[in-house]
Image (cartoon, rainbow, N blue to C red; front, side):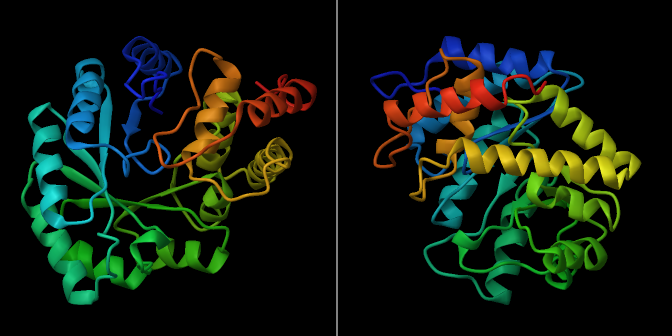
Length: 290
């Protein structure tokens, strides 16, 4: 997550502490600038500042840092990838341009051009509806055959059929699943967890992942149900739809009040009153979850 001060500049001190706490928590795969990290909202100058600070602390032995690049054009995507590559990043999250949905040939051209420009790097594709299309398992398999450094996907869905399709028909890729479908994926085979609750419940998140590795389905679905109840109850007083970072930043703010859950305009997250209600709900019902 990215903490913004009242002038909407990166709070480097808080951000640096956040990075160190991530490392101290045992996490070796850390990424910035996805949708929850406001990768869609940054100017070129702000993007370079954030990536520079991130790379300074995370490009080191034993850590696999990843930078997300979201752009309306392939040219913008390539420019940002080049800068992050120069800072030592070799793992990237990319998404398809969203101004107009790409057809099959255009999607293949996008992956071949973008991933092919950095043959020493690995790429994860964020398969999200905002791009205008969702790639299926067979489509991924065809692209992966033509683009060998596309190695992973990120998918958020509670649909079992869609999750199973990815696992069965594109097994050559590592599929990172959010809490809502990680347990589903584990019923089919090996998958990875892209965790959003780690800041709020670090130990429970590790237990969730380890249960998946063991394929301990009762424990997996027990914890999945806990996460579901938390998400429903914590934001029950916020019925409107909000951008992803509204929720993820609030998780961090609940554990670390110095980490602002402020969003870059024009997006509006939780108000101060709504945030305080979240804190009351958290302290009443969930603060004892490790």
